[in-house]
Length: 277
Image 1 (cartoon, helix red, strand yellow):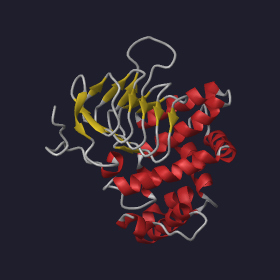
Image 2 (cartoon, helix red, strand yellow; image 1 turned 135 degrees about the horizontal axis):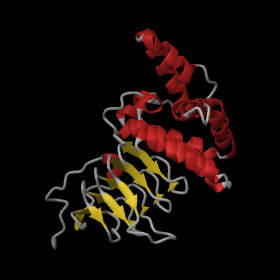
Image 3 (tube, rainbow, N blue to C red; image 1 turned 60 degrees about the vertical axis):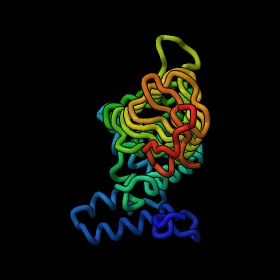
Image 4 (tube, rainbow, N blue to C red; image 1 turned 135 degrees about the vertical axis):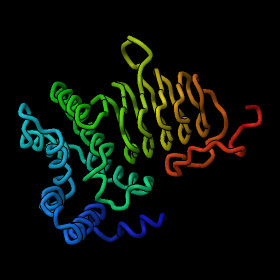
């Protein structure tokens, strides 16, 4: 168990993530009174995590066309109907907290990190998409792109424990699938290769690490616990537990560890390189 997990979250509460967020919020208000109104509105005013998440989604996406109250009702309905949304959001918070050295408190992703917020909006939009409310889902996609510079289609399937660092210029296509415990940096594209229809976007396995600016294109699989080096253009399937790099990308070595998305180690060392590379 990491030092952060030992410091941050207890194991004997009904919702340890929410309890920790409330405790941190109370300390933040005491230390920085200028933040009191914001922290009460985002955290301390709410009875539970799902309610706070719905409020935060609505407050970030609201427009004159789609007021916050309406968006909050949509988000609350989605969270109530699909427990996975809240479960995945909690896992995402802990993924950010444990993997991002810039994240010092559990409360920070909900308050400040656009990668976390954008993915939670996509999870709500995905629920709407699955339930034949596609225009509302597409409206949320548009607002997420405008607010967070992340274009994630509501039909894309995203696993829990996702960490997006910096989170600028991320593209996730309609038929993309992202597994659990994936980490990616800014500028990543999970896209198609042209105008073809149907299943045309990448399938990212559990535990994968995708470096800044990498492009994974087409209906290809990136095997579990692999690494995609920064700036790579991946056009062919990636075997599990390997590192790919280059334009076009090719296998340059082993993954370097059992869970690259957790280690966040982008370096390719001599020990990682396969003998025939």
